[in-house]
Length: 530
Image (cartoon, rainbow, N blue to C red; front, top):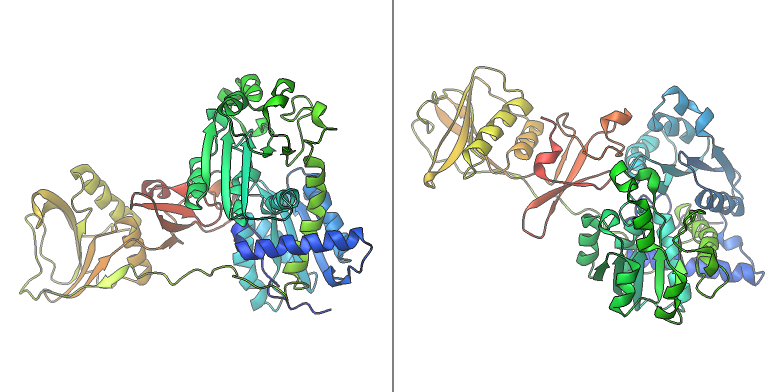
């Protein structure tokens, strides 16, 4: 059996780790596998069938359906299946997850790690850190599959959901009208739909949740950017009164374990807002189907048990589909299937635009100086700091530059008029005797104070001038921190994961900073600990 398909060695940390065409390929192969199994056909072309291939199932949070569907999928592949017991493992001895996985990589020629954890972004971190490490050490690059990480994503649940929707729609992907109902704030399965629904060419989504449980703005914005038509409602009663209800409903349970006390006090009202009732039956489309990632809360299910034996029940078949889609995912990443894939693959990160631009030097007998700033004979001058901003912001920026760059040496600084007008101010820091400024310091200065200029001075003349923009990536600075306490990089978890932010332009033309690991968005001011 050839195991050199185009997906070999890749990982699935988020939905977007598979392009839309690659997701559609997954659904087609899962459909083929399911049909072949039902017909008693030959399934060998889907199997890894290698007793030396190790599948590690590491579930650091409780799970039944995801864990068991992956266990059975791994058994289908006839590979070595390792159920990792975290309660009796080295995690109980305070070993980092990075060190634990690094050890396990060496125990088999090839390994696939299926991980569920409260640490958001853990699979992306392990993929990017341990992949290159394994190659340097002579091991096969390990595969990581995210089986749910905190409130972040659950990509394999999303893939089985989309497969189930396609199955319901007769495998037509031209359009879908879907209602998302329940706890949209904490539910990682609905968060994954912000990108997963791109498998359909035209998407209409109705968001049904009270304000306390509403979909986070980041995912709403993502849906809009993806061209989805959106409507929002505070309750099922409001939704049904508006008319044009969706034929496919996707419910989630209220995740009380993730809620604060103020929200818990309102739990009865919140449940009622998103729980289906018998008197609603006459107001939904005749061909409607209900879906749910499960489990349901047996005491207060949003889909009550009186619906179990009705045609509305789509959740039982949906749950069973997890076996087929996860078996195909494992086969793809092991290189068993994919040779017949045609379409657009995952886009690679583009070349990063330069953020340090060397500027022309206007020859002067001496560098420009300001009242109160001693001219620099040899050293550097940081100019145009927060130019045009309010005075307090300029002073704050000067202070941040000095602390982040460690400029606790002989120097001077101040706020002065800019050449742009008498009411426009800028900051200047003058540092004599400092002759070198490395690439990391340039990136740090650009990240702390984009728009400033750096002048290198020798013998009273500016010999180099740099204009600094905002770096496309900001990382490896001890002064950075992701504010998401569940992020794998958060210092409270002591995982020694470097903080890493990616800059993205927002709709208003400004910049937002997205954590590389957990994808939490931050304002510029939020990423600094100083």
